[in-house]
Image (cartoon, rainbow, N blue to C red):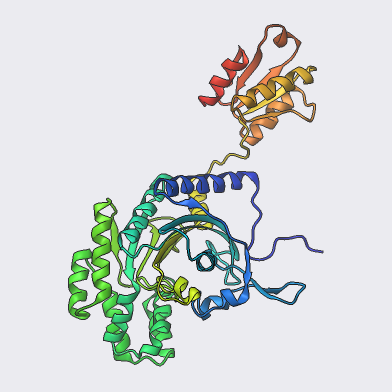
Amino acid sequence: MELKAPKGTRDFPPEEKIVRDRIADALKEVFGLYGFSPFETPVIELYDVLASKYAGGAEILKETFRLQDQGQRELGLRYDLTVPLARYVAMNPRMKMPFKRYHVGDVFRDGPVNLGRYRQFTQCDVDTIGASSLKADAELLALAQRAFRKLGLDGTVRVNNRKLLKEVTDACGIPAEKSDDVILSLDKLDKVGREGVEKELKGKSIGGDSIGKLLSIIGAKGNNAEKITRLKKDVPGSVGLGEVEEVLGYAGGLGVDAVFDVSLARGLSYYTGTIMEVVLKSGKVRSSVCGGGRYDRMIGDFIGRGNVPAVGISFGLDRIYDALVEKEEARAKTVTQLLIVPLGEYGKAARITEELRSDGVRVEIDLMERGPSKSLQYADSLGIPFVAFIGEDELKQGRMKLKSMKTGKETLCTVKEATAVILDG
């Protein structure tokens, strides 16, 4: 038997999980600043829910893991956190609106694997349900910008509108029944380039004149105002363009430096208006690290009573992790702040350990009965910043010998003094 993790999945040793938890904690802190509360759903959903025509669409179903339980019920692993949210809201029609929630959890897709793309990955979703105002869309742009600044990553916030893309395809003479398929091809522009998209569109029997006009419009250059001016000529009376202007106006009032990108498509078919994403300005992770949009039909279609306003954005924790690791070569291998080494006085040292833990210090006590030299080697190998030796002489003085692994300085100090030194870093 070959022991290895399935393709597209990973184990996370402590030095990696520490970084991932730091990302999740930072995101949760930002989510809370905007009034979003925690929420959770099962990783397994009924396949009919995932396969609903109102959910992710045919493209995502190709990557859905299917399974049966012992009762022969058709199930699937969730491919995102939005469809389970829609199902929950549909099941609770009397809930107070707006419903603002965040959800950090694993999702699963049986798709291609490369840098930044995995088959099991963690999403961090933020959604506002019940608010039709585009102020809710702008708020998510502000949240995204604040989140990446907190993480120390330089990203570009990009905005477009699904209605606008539909109006653009109409203006280019593309049949309505092919519009969604064409938009799926546009979503691959960053991956396969203009020539690749052009080839794919020809394979979908789109005429050369229509392709040329389409690629010319979505390739509009200049600042936001210049792009909007051009689009007003190319797609006069556009509803989607009006929404783009409105969202950018609200976002500007929140201090968001967003870029209107006419080529931004977002592949999922449930988007109905604003679409958004964040891409990093440098580094190896070139795919979007965060994306989302407005999906006003999905929940209402589950309920069967028309539109329920909804807008959300999802942060790809795995891609953010890859970007941070690329920036930061040195990573902690443990959360431990202090290693206590008992010198023949384990019981008394253990009580001191508990006292330090009560004061908020993350403490590990030596369980291997190492000597001082090997204990120091162990602490150094894991990056533990402090080591304390507690023996008979130290106990007589009511103190411990505290050594800083960074400076090499040793001091005799009380528990309270050690706590202050360690927590001050």
